[in-house]
Amino acid sequence: MTIRIGDVAPDFTAETTEGKIQFHEWIGDQWAILFSHPKDFTPVCTTELGYMARLKPEFDKRNTKIVGLSVDPVSDHNAWATDIEETQGHAVNYPMIGDADLTVAKLYDMIHPNASGGQRSAADNATVRSVFIIGPDKKVKAMFVYPMSSGRNFDEVLRLLDSIQLNAKHTVATPVNWKPGEDVIIPTSVSDEDAKKKYPQGFKTLKPYLRLVAQPK
Image (cartoon, rainbow, N blue to C red; front, side, top):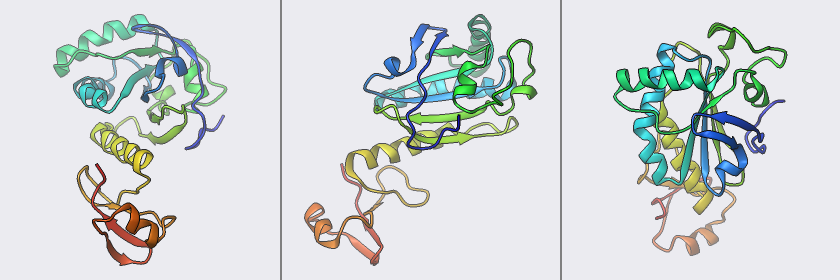
C-alpha cells in the first residue's frame, strides 16, 4: 500500500508503552506526528527520541500528539527509555508503539511488504525511518523519509506543522525558509479583489502570481 499526501492515514490497533491504542481514536480531534525507528538501542534514534521528549511541550501548544514506533516489542522500548533519559537528559513522555510483527511498518509502506518479523537487524529495517504529519481529519499532510545515518531535524517538523496549520486556518502558503511571524503568500486561487477584502491592511505584489501579506493572527 503506497501512502500519499492527502490519503487517509491507515488505522491500526497496537500495543504501546502507554497501553493499547486504536490510532484514529487516539488522535481524536487533534493533529498527530507518527515517527518510526528501525530498531531499539540504536544510536541516532536514541538522540531523536530524547529530542522529541524535549520538544513535546511545543507540540502540545499546537494541539498535536506525538507517537513513536520501533519494530521491536514494547518490553524493549521500556528498557531503551532508561538509556534515552540517561544519555539525552529527557525522559520519553509520549507512547512508543511496539511493531515486532511489522504490521504498522507495512501499513505505512515503510518496509517491503514481504518482510517478516522475528530477529531482524537495524539494517534489515533501514527504510523504517519515516515521519508522518496527520491532521484531525486523519489525512496525511506531510511525510519525511531519512537514511539511518542522518538524524532527523525535528525543529523542521515543528516548522512544517506551523505552516500546515496556518494554511488549514487561513488558506495561505508559506515561502522558502519561512518562520512563524514572517510574511506569507496569498494563493493564486484568491483574486486581487478578494485579497483586498480579506487583507484591508494591504499586501505586496511582486508579480501577479506572487503576493505577500503579513501572517494572519
